[in-house]
Amino acid sequence: MSALPSSNFSGNASGVDGKTLVLQAADLVAIISQTVKLTKRGTSYVGLCPFHSEKSPSFHVHPDRGYFYCFGCKENGNAIDFVMKRDRLPFIDAMRSLADQYHVELPKGGSSKEGAGLRQSLLDACSAAATFFEQNLQNPKLGGPAREYLAKRGFNDETIKQFRIGLAPDGWDNLAASPLMKKFRPELLNQAGLLKPGEKRPGFYDTFRHRLMFPIRDEAGRVIAFGGRVMPGNTSPAKYLNSPETPLFSKSKVAYGLDLGRQKIVETKTVAVVEGYTDVVMAHQYGASNVISVLGTALTESHVNLLRRFAGRIVLLFDGDAAGDMAVQRALELFLTQPIEIGIATLPDGVDPDEYLLQNGVEAFDKMLATAEDALSFQWKQLFRELSANEDDLTARSKAVEAYLERLSAARGSGPVDPLRWGAILARVAKVTDISAEDLNRRFRVAKPAFQRPAQFPQQNSAPEVKISSPPRQVIPANRQTAERWILGGLLHRPAAWQEIQQTIAVSDFMTDSLRPLAEWYWDHQRNEGEPDLAEVIRLLDSGPLKTLAIELASEADGMNNQQTLAESVSFLRSEKERQAQTKHLGVLRRSKIERLSDDVEVDLLRKFQEAAGSRSADKS
Image 1 (cartoon, rainbow, N blue to C red):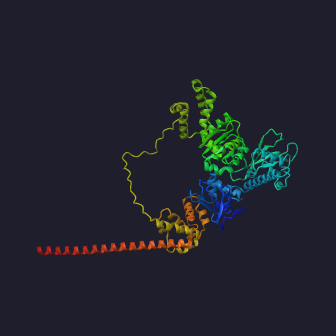
Image 2 (spheres, rainbow, N blue to C red):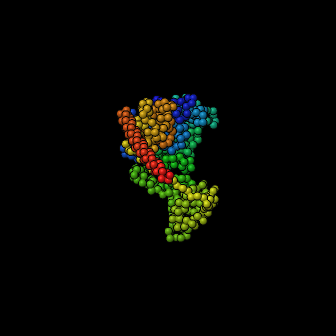
């Protein structure tokens, strides 16, 4: 198999599975570079691992062999594995994501050809539109006022480029008439949410006019929709305008800024949710890249399912006193029903996230997120402030407790709550309300699960279970384990050497339990399928311990003089085999000598017995 190509690949081949097609097409370095800053080192690349915190790079990418490996946390795999780990996706979704990205037509059972073709056309149209808007912003005359506005708001050129901020000019058909968009049918641009059908006359007109444009991207960084903010002088009553729902874009399932914030979110295990596009952009500009927006909507279960792939904690960040009852109640519902921590933090009155970062820095911002109260405590304190002007007023406190429990009951009724989570929540509620957990249980009428009789009881007179102790496991010397590891690692790099090695080294010679299954697989593949290169081995082994072990062994052997290392390791194992054979032979000789000695003694005793028996017979006669 040749090295993985970086160019796009489309089409299918008879008998080739979708995974193989995707891995052949995927550019491993380009995919990982979306998250990790890689530096070329020889034929491989190195960078800081995205899966654990480190200061010195231990994350290695081998594009010619199709895998990555971290010497620190031992994470490893191919392009699909990386997307699964990075985006917290199941295998099939990660494969389909890469198939879309590299124009791979999956075999039947994956995306249909027609559906995949439409999706790619919509992606191409959105990407072209983003370029059109960017060019307008950079146009010396057309984009001047917009650039001045952005500069006044504090956006720098690097940030504008990073988020691909652009400009939709004033007018009805600037996008539709652009040379960049001529290759797309108006009907397709309408499906992408870029054009709208005319109401009074036939044809289409631009969806976005006289607005700053913020491309909305998916986790892979592909433009799927747009958000437009009014420019000064635009009389539209809508400050923000989002793309309509399309085959690419569902507002309740997308988080703005996630593609750029994903790495820090994974590292900190915390994601902050703010109100709008500009809040996200400015937070990233000041270094708080774990900030995203849910496009002005309330946080939904779909958002939570998306974000918990990357973080264990969501913090809703409100401006000043903007934490309205509905938003807090919704956060409380999600806190109870979803397997994730949800916190709420508020900024000082009249202070935006960018102003807070400018005044206090990223460390203070991160500390504010870390100390944010969970939705349960925040709801209680908010109600207590509203209803209990005086802490000594027992009536006011009683009202606050009653209102709090009512809201908690309503939140609990919004969906199924895990019993263990509910128990932990009641313990917290008991602490803040001074009501015992038992009383709370009675109030909320927590039903205990019905007793279920076991399917089968043990018989009264059944014999006790006899535990048979297994013999102690054989201790394998460290130098032998090393030799076995180096042989397998060397063969993964030099499969042609197996023909000679297998004449003296058999699978049974691998005494290390963890190595023998891989040796069995490799020997079997060599005999039946031929020489596999490393990329093929990793692909064929699928996900699991054998693939992890193969990558680990290959990484250990990488950079060694494989020919010399293999020769020395094989020589060591041969010597061990000869020594064991000699030891076994000596043991056989010793046993046979003892057996012969025993035979001689037995013959001598028999002779003496016979002599004694003959003597007794003579006496009787």
